[in-house]
Length: 154
Image (cartoon, rainbow, N blue to C red; front, side, top):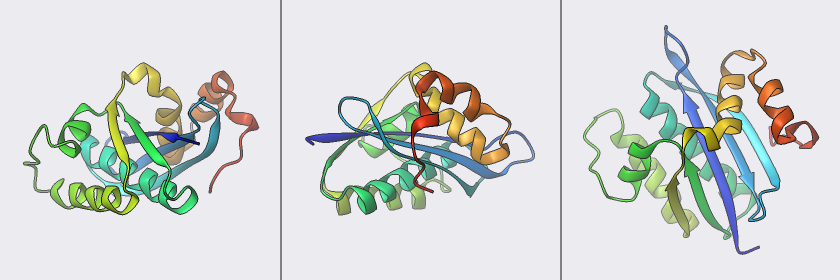
């Protein structure tokens, strides 16, 4: 296996905010789902939630697939631009999350960040919403992606 695709998405949900939903999908280079997870974490902004999804995804990859190169796909342009050094991290709340993500990248060794359109990240988005409130997002989107036949990493 030359590389993995790690799709992540985070959402702080609807007000009142404070808990974010995180969607994580690990695929092989042919696109087959190898692992997935939906988790909750404390966050109040969309960018915090997106960073937490990257952190959760990299943690999963390090634990389950150590040493395999990773292409991390997210619909958060700001997270990609900050983690690749194109933009500085100015928001104080994001600085510790950025640092945690960078440490995981260094620990893993080979991670590339790629911004993708929101439409291509629907399954990770559905997992993030499922983690928040279980409103059937996963069932609707999962049927389209064949998720029902996949075992969760939870």
